[in-house]
Image (cartoon, rainbow, N blue to C red; front, side):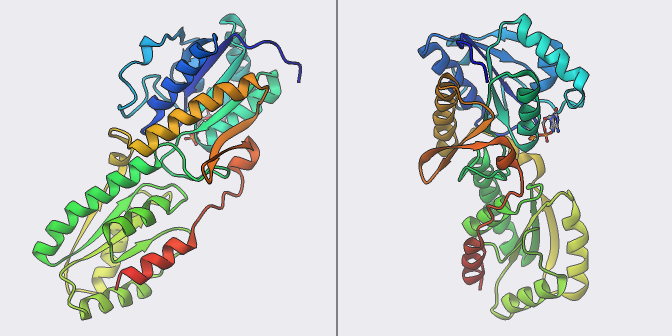
Length: 328
Ligand code: ADP
């Protein structure tokens, strides 16, 4: 790829928002200033790139945001960017605003778009994984995952209080499109009785047996954490089915949904985002492109976009084993 000196870097957040995206934006902007590069913010992801919704950022534009959830640059899902015409307009704006390279903060969809765009128009792009789902190859954790898990665990703790007071069986549904990682980790942290995840499906019969076992051991309540698994609300049907065969407890359902996307990011997410933001700028200056930044075993790692997003397999069966041992 022909390289030219990078003088202006554009940063944007795209797809599903995640707590810690602001910390990543701040780190990109401040690293740019450190290396004497002009940072520009692109609003609403690829939609803003197409609309030219772009402005210069300063060190002060990112003051007081490291602790805030959401994203000051807003986020969007852009249908137009999936078309060659949309990407052509996006590139015209890149030229118009004199942007030499991009930092894309988002999930797998964002990186698929970045890969296509970077190849079509020879523009350097690096990615920062910002998604609560932790569903990318090439990083131990994505930004937002730790916060989402903490939010889920503290919500499950609160539900436990009411569940034990009334001898109830609660189904608690948490986000996670194709991944049970939020469900499994929050379930272990909050001591739930069972976890249902898309990676290792459990049928109603098995679940009922498990709950019977717990009831036999005189548990005052039972909590089942259910991963949404691309079917939001499916825990309602599941609870009904289970209730027909198991009626030791009054049965209730709580769907945590978008609650998990909000809130102040945890220290782990703030530090991860800060580190990745600096590395993103430095890697562009070292002529990297088409890669997602990750941290694996506390070391910086670069993964080509197509590998980061394809056949993602970071399910930790050891965690399921631990959850099983501890839920008796
Ligand atoms: P996430 O990044 O959180 O996975 P999405 O899957 O919605 O979120 O992707 C974010 C955006 O990335 C999409 O709205 C679209 O604009 C862009 N995108 C995703 N896939 C492609 C693709 N194959 N070609 C071009 N752009 C894409």
